[in-house]
Image 1 (cartoon, chains in turn yellow, purple):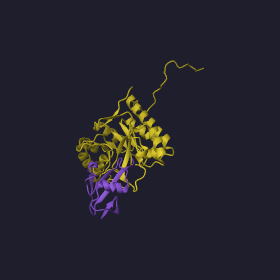
Image 2 (tube, each protein chain N blue to C red):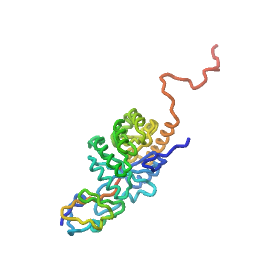
Image 3 (cartoon, rainbow over the protein chains, first blue to last red):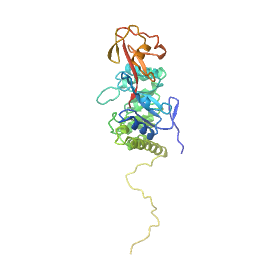
Length: 259
Length: 66
């Protein structure tokens, strides 16, 4: 069965895995991991240029091949996040932004009030806003109404590797909004990505799960396969769950071995 | 005169333009953005925007992130 593309702000992507560029042991490993992941969108942060300015991460990213997705990581207010998006646009990184407004440094959970405010402003200003939010269906709907191009609920805290902690809420989000739903953060291993896709999510975004793995290149490939497998399983339609067994072999025609 | 560049004090010629500052610092301008006193400076205005005593300049570019 042929699949549709993931559409974000009018752009089409055949890969449903979005990967980060942080925490890699070397640029070479990052490049190989990106290749193995099959991702078409990669996230970047915006930070002060170190002076004198030396090598840039963009020396290691083929910008004709990957769509760069600047984030607003480290922003604790809507104002900071909005200004960071303007900087990203002026830097030539396009208008697609991964919007983060962080509410607490220990959990890195989003400040949803700031997030909603920033989403409204940036959507009005023509940005394709991809907000990192919590797994709250009510907030997901508010973000959609505010103009978010997708909603990106967390599976678990950023970098925690705890997996999809509340698949039921994610399911409700999927039934609540019409924009694509991308699980952002919390994935630890391939089965977590597969679960997100099996539930019906439109994509998965991850960084640490790949960059922090003992072999990031193999893990990137595992994530690619998991996202594809989960997507296929979701579209194929799983069987219902039952408490008792149902035989797979015919009950008729079993030989009689009684003596 | 003294300005702040990426959080560090720096002494530059009064009225230097953003363009001039980037030249002095030798900043590679590809995918770089500048804000002066919290306002983003469009690239088209680098040559005309002048800096004055106490101005706070931020020069950013993409780094690894998730």
